[in-house]
Image 1 (cartoon, rainbow, N blue to C red):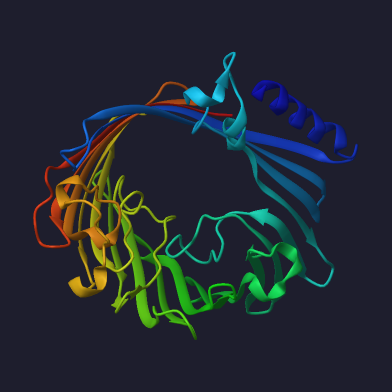
Image 2 (cartoon, rainbow, N blue to C red; image 1 turned 45 degrees about the vertical axis):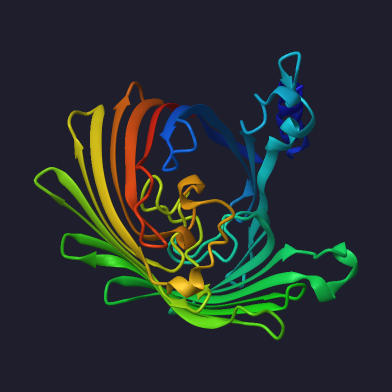
Length: 395
């Protein structure tokens, strides 16, 4: 069923494209085998597979107009016993074949560029710091100015429990930003505001991203101030966040250092979100809201086809223990570390190696080691160890 649906969708894309549109396609697929020793002794070691198939299609109508579609096929439920019939995914398994992006772009003669549709990275700006991967409806307008580009973006996160019929329960976001240059740096200041009328939570954020070089050192950074307010919700506060990453090459080694900071005000933390993943585990499966993290990464190309890299990171919470409220329903020995409310300080060491089998195919393997103390200052029951082997193709 999946193959038939996928083929029909691609055929529909080409058939519906106007004859004068230039069509460009690219994509990727990976298959990855994973092993984990959990930090929880009550959970046995386990192994699992994952994969992701992505096809990007651009329909270029002319030099000013284009449309983009991204189709993804995830593995989440394909192999679940309840979702397989005759070797094909059915039921809930089909929910993981989806259009993850559908947008259009048009440049007007006034210097205004319109872009809108459905895409991920809500409230995205500057670096990945603070970005959210959730897909949203959005409309964005970029206006070229003598001193840079002015951007306005409005987003629709959700229509609320009453659907499209009640605007009083919508969750909307708005961004006003400027991209300019000064002293050899690209600067991106912005104002962001979101209003979740259903939960009565308003978020205001001022942020500035900067990209540039200081000698042989490439720097990307983002700084933000965030205020969360509500007339009814208990969690309110003002917080500060920062991400600074510096990269250089010394003696054939690529050296990268990163510093992340997310302050906490009672139970409210600056939103780091899940797009910025400094490590294999930290930032991906273990959240970094309300923490400070320092990371060092060193990479080396051994040959034209073989490369290795090593990373080490140390993180600690900025929250008071009284504000963590981890809501343990089990003893700490039975609770996996999966968020900032569950650790006091923690460290991670990663090692990865890759082999480029061809221009399109890459083999890679790696291991991540995580250990530290829980929120109550007790050591983790045991270290968490993740390992993987992966084959990927790009086309």
